[in-house]
Image 1: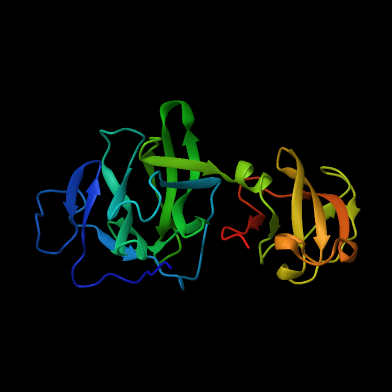
Image 2: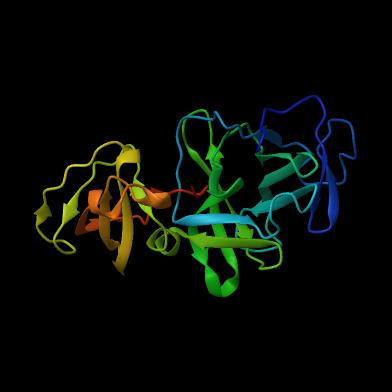
Length: 257
């Protein structure tokens, strides 16, 4: 179970690329470019604005494999650029409880998204794949403005996933604030199909074409076995699963059955 909460009186020392960085208020202020930054730990009850971006940047080592880790954000895609923030991971109880957080010059509402079973990352909105850098949306300030920075992509430490690939390979449902719409082809004619609650249907991707997916809509949901095959109504149609900015209009179950 993931446990997360706001900053306590004393924060742990976190490794950054092999360098131990103390986030405590009294320790080693000359050791780290993060010494004057404000940490905010994400909680399971964080609400408000979320930008899922075009993908997710995450730690390469699975949760529970290390006591703590940090991904630094820089002002530009260069190791010589100024450090402008960090994405934090801290194991609270060995192998059983951990938390994620963000670090910036001012307090942010964390933009932390769970992408797998109890695994979280920060959304990606720009990628220079050939140079190994991605720009992430770390969080939002009190005025709702996004706070961004560049992270170095390194398969050994920091990896990324693109929603275009993740969503096209998973059983999906429409996000709560997205009206379900179905078509007979990409940019085609509307298909009349009424959906019940999120738990009453599931969509199985069949084919991807740009921001469009051809899906099999199962009602009621046949995920995890579901009802007998003869009781499921299947409809094949196209949906636009990404917005023009590459943001997801659908989502997937990261925790399985």
